[in-house]
Length: 290
Image (cartoon, rainbow, N blue to C red; front, side):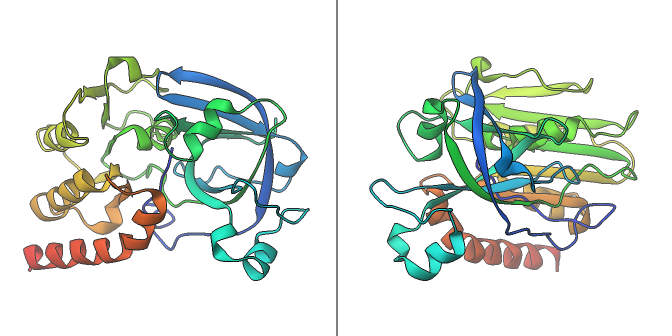
């Protein structure tokens, strides 16, 4: 799922983001349709020999999709491409969460939201067949459920499902959790790991995130300090960030919260405007907290 995670401290996983720029090349081993709009692709092969992940549950990679008709150097070399080729010929970058990394098997699992022929990554995933190759950079990431939190909140739309699922596998035993996921309809529901009750919200024709933002603001608030993971479309993330920071007075070090994507923008458009968007959100928040 296209993602751009929040960042964290060693215990709370909210410290400086750790970036690895190493280029890897995965070979498609298999794929499956999890739901009508979610496709799982498993990569493997010798090109993953130096890949490592597992410290965080929101690990992500920067997939590099070649542009049609453009020939790239072999071996594939991003530094050389950026130095020698015009920008319009650079591969298309799309950010996706690592659903699972099996170091023993050398297998990397990535889940893709599929919106038909629209976009780049979804069409690639639906047509992926064993033997296909895909280069990527990473992983990045910074969040995992804190062992010292009084309770956990995990909320997101389809784009956050891989990170939420990975996080459910790491929730401390016996610690309360509120997990809310908004998807298009019941056909998009998945079996998720763990024994925590998940609240599924079906938006139907409503604006993405409206149901989720409303539901999060109505949950009971357990005792103890929360550690929250809230990701997905930027509009509802903004609403919930204000709620958590201003109304609930949750400190930033207890939050992993960011817009993975924004309605009406592809990843290139969203990433180019995200810094300014975040600046305005932070200024509004500071005024409300003053």
